Image (tube, rainbow, N blue to C red):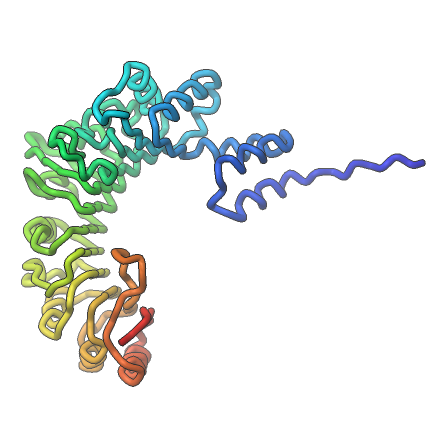
Length: 363
């Protein structure tokens, strides 16, 4: 009886399978790594690219793994550390050693600190060994935001030492925390492209003191409970820097009363507003202020007002209009209009050559 020939395995299939999804579970990847040696290398690169750790035990296990096999450290390009202590206060010497080892990995480009590490987060930022390589930094205090103890509230004190340490940073994202900004005593410039403040309470200082002599700020994104919490900070930034994209989102719906729109903002090309009730007066203010606006994303506007506004020739440089932006509720934005008014809006955008993305349902 002739023996059956073993078919040749095409290793490119490994990459095709792995690239078919961006949502592999670590357990699935672990099982794939045991199929054959052809799977081991590609799976390792996926598993270790950006580990997400939510306990000190997980941090210690990863630290031991990397210590036992140093060649794996070069695969780690980012790390997400969100450990929680049992009593929210005590961190053992072994836990601290594991954190120091992980934060000391060379070449880390993406770092997220959450859990207990978001409390006085500057302590852990100073432990990052290769801060020059960090391009994305996120401090997330969401899991500690409701702490009843003031000493355990998520917070960050930003000063010039952090600015020099993270001089190549492209994205800074701070969420659910207190931020104190110390006025710089010497000049510095940052390379930040995207600055995000998500429910941040400014306990001291202003955003321009964080940016200092930075030449421009391409994108500024802010979320807050109410617009009044953001008024002064937004105006300070727009008065001091060239901002191309401005996103403002509030939890409590209300009128658009941002003083920033009382002044000319010719640099803004993209504007995104969510949680505001936009009337004709608000739209006139935006049109007058943002004369070079190309992309506009809104929620909470009557379609009739918007149609009339576009038909009258306002926003002369607008190329894209999005009425579906509503990240707060994770649903499509609610805009008021019936079928006939929507058709009028479609006609107006077609006539103007504006790409329209509709949000449903309309009422």
